[in-house]
Length: 151
Image (cartoon, rainbow, N blue to C red; front, side):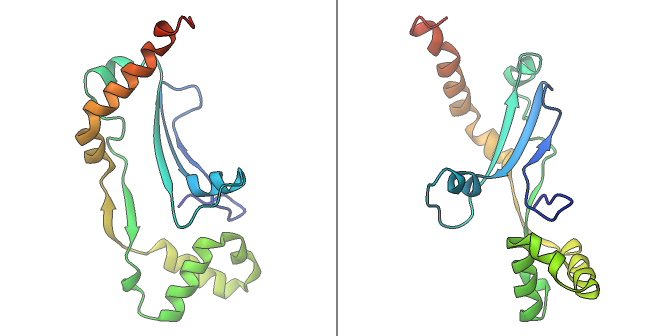
């Protein structure tokens, strides 16, 4: 989770807006709900934006997600069901953290900061396993303007 200074869930950007490779991690469900589309559950999206200077690396098979680690929280590490519930609540509604007293806020910030992960989403392997299909789709869309006399 990427939380800004006001405790709101935000998009995580890795790389500058004009860099040749930029990674974006965001809550797609939240984005869809803003557009009036009903979405149940979590729907996180990880994107790699590749510009022309980085394209030779992509063509050589370098994984743009190399070094990116996305982990799932081990909720069982918190023994108290009340603390589990409060932590999940603060993650779902980060703005509410400002409404509790200082000691409670400090307690749950410490718990949340120290939560271990029990599972890692292996996005690097997922990309490697689907590289051929991703490349086909990229080639299709790069050729689309030429096929349709748009350029």
